Image 1 (cartoon, rainbow, N blue to C red):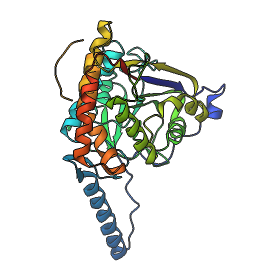
Image 2: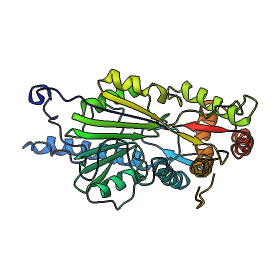
Image 3: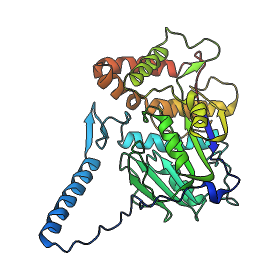
Image 4: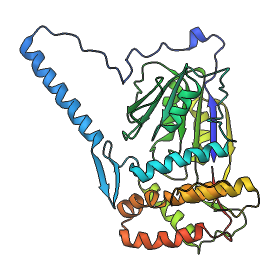
Length: 359
């Protein structure tokens, strides 16, 4: 796991260097338009606005169905992972894998705490909203906004948490006021232009605010046991080529540190973790992570030991991670993909292959 955290520099004279907050209101609460006294023209404009709103709502709620899975329809194709119940279950399981990776109940590496809480938090690509809800519970005085292309968040959330359907790649951001914490997790392959994202985050952070980005890079091994002859290596190589073909490389996280610094962040620190592919490590902690990471890219089970969690996470999301790239981008048939994935799952469970996912 590659976690990159950096903060916006604090100028010597903040009052002279910090720009005023944007005048535009938050996207969730658009300001009422000025009243026009011209009756017929006003009615005509109102009808156009209503039609536009209904059309947007329809596109947000309508899903694309493909290969037995559903995908977001709003900004169709911008994100290659499904948004159906199996994927949502995997995302929630993956959240626990992140907690386990960071030591149990730690939600982030940025230097916030209950004694020093953030005031305004943006969760980029919130997914099911599980991280945003946990942050809202942890910091009840903070305002937390989670944004995503899919409306898959829970109907009930902490009172200080709100969700918005939005595309963070559209600029400028219209969230009204600046944040002191911007968080993004597992958005590799979902963002076309990370440098632009980092610039937008920087421009929308208070001086001294923090951004934290956590992402995965392709599976590898240190001892050569993941060879080019394995189905796991072939699958990952084709997946990388497919995501690169649509401008959303699965291997972009290694560039985040430099890109954040170029956007203006200072004190940028990169922390790399390893998610073992299965229970091959001797260390009990990594065994547990590996089990759940494997299951998370096949089926949800309760288990206890980091290789176990990695196995769970990667296995359950394997089809979802592969289907759109292989069939939509690379032109494979669903049947050919199913055959490949059967061999990939066998490799994932093989303790003789000492593979891991750099995070």
